[in-house]
Amino acid sequence: MLLMSHRGGHQESKKKLEISPSETMKAEEENYKEEAKEPKSEDWRSPSVFGAADLKNRAVGLYNIGQTCCLNSLLQVFLMNIHFTKILRRISVPVCATQKKKNVPYQMLLLLEKMQCGKQKAVSPRELVLCLEAHRVTMFVQYDAAQLFLTLWNLLKKQMKNPELVEKLSDLYTISVQEHLACQICSSETKRNSSMLSLPVPLLDSDSSMLKTLEKCLQCFFRPEELTGHNMCFCEHCGKKTPFQQSVKLVHLPQTLTIHLKRFCFGRSAYIHKISNCLPFPQDLDFNAVLTEQQCQAYDNEKAAWKYELFAVVAHSGTTSYGHYCAYIRSLTECKWYCFNDSFVEQVSWDDVKSTYGHSDLYWGQTAYLLFYMKKQPQ
Image (cartoon, rainbow, N blue to C red; front, side, top):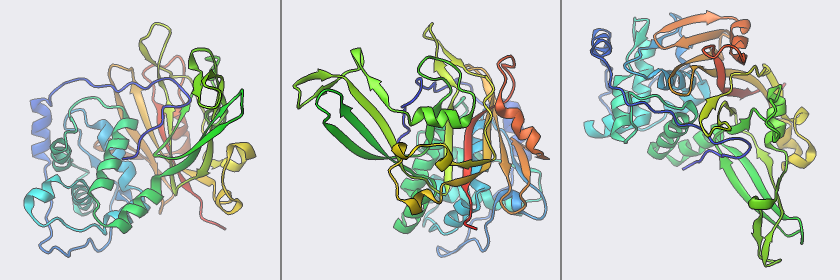
């Protein structure tokens, strides 16, 4: 399974609050429940699956059935990505009813079908929620969006039995880096290739000063780090603990690039707090203009494709104890921005998206937490 890196910032908070869905939420779910029609043949394929908001009728929301705003936001980001839905519509349908109920890719495809074929403004994700619970994913609690995104992606990859589809899913989201660890006494160096689902960039530099732009955050993440004092490593050549330099070099970027803004961190009091400060992020992002040659380990043809355009923003409002998620997503076919706030969906402007930059005085204001960039097509 793919893991999230914890380099370049403070440790993250996995926020969970055990609360069961209220009777009102259950009633709302039953009132708007629309059963998905299951295919009758094992060889069935959805004839045409595009992004959920790319329908001619309207964008479709997802009902919050009990602290599912985080899940709803991530599902909209997945299902609005036409590169992802092209993979999803090629999955094999499980044979028996029990397997269907426990298959995350299949339940996600059924949910997409409900969103496309229904006449309602929103549909319930109940069946997918039950499916996730069958895989010991605790629902009806507050989640950290970065952790839940990783959980969903790992379940999708694990349950896609077709090796070709697994490879396509990995190519779509996986970042490749090379980790370097060099002894500062004898200059011996070890290298290790690794994969990441997102770039977890810090919002504070090594002096705990606030970084001003997304580009500065990316540069900080890839900046070499000196390991001295209590952080020294054992060097086999020197036979003792010595100062080391640790660095990460970028090797490959995927079609859909996920950037995790590490807004939740430990303060001096050992309590986790949220960084609500303003952090501008661009619509267009060129990694060649952000990183130096020394921070990359890629061929020129690879680096030539490192030009991106913002696709989606998962925003968080609230505190570390409780809060709310919504998603701003750009339709890849209409080139229009939408705000997906559970069952409420509306078209918005770029100025609305910029409102998620954050503000140090607005603790309940929306702040961007996950950024999704889509690779530009070659001209």
